[in-house]
Length: 244
Image 1 (spheres, rainbow, N blue to C red):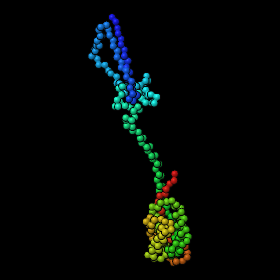
Image 2: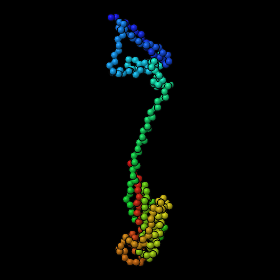
Image 3: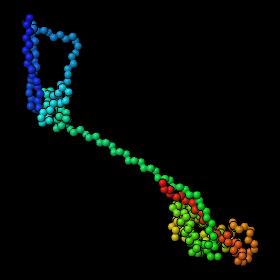
């Protein structure tokens, strides 16, 4: 029995339209009889044809110009962006989301200052039986505001008092006028909001001297003894910024 093996090799490649074709046909003749191909019912898988020629390591073959070699199976539908970018839309660039802004550290909360109550001598602030501030009285108030530097005022309370010399009605009005004189200076000269300052005049109420000063006549000794009762009490409450 003799064998005849006719082998025709046909490789098909094209470089973007320029093709070289080869087909492979192999005929095996066994004498005068052709061996039948038997199918056992098992389906044989077909490999997906390559659109571009690849080398032994799977890389696309390119010519000296850098163009990919197309196979005979190539169609526009099989084009890739790496080899035929003109046939495909450009891939969208991935836009990275901007980094979030750093969260600033919270500002320190203002520290609340404990209410400060100061008793100012009326004799230091005013002349006897008067409600006009003396230069020494203005300096005393300046020192008070400087001491409370940086405080955001919530409330300032100024309460005027008088000694027991004179009528109750007169002392009530005098102590009120003195409290209002303190408020006017703090508003006009020191810039404290007027709606933060509250005033009252209590006359000869709540004497500091108690019953230590005897007599009711306006003697120099009695006036001097009752001096602590002639006063203006100033109470300040507010908040102060803290620096860290």
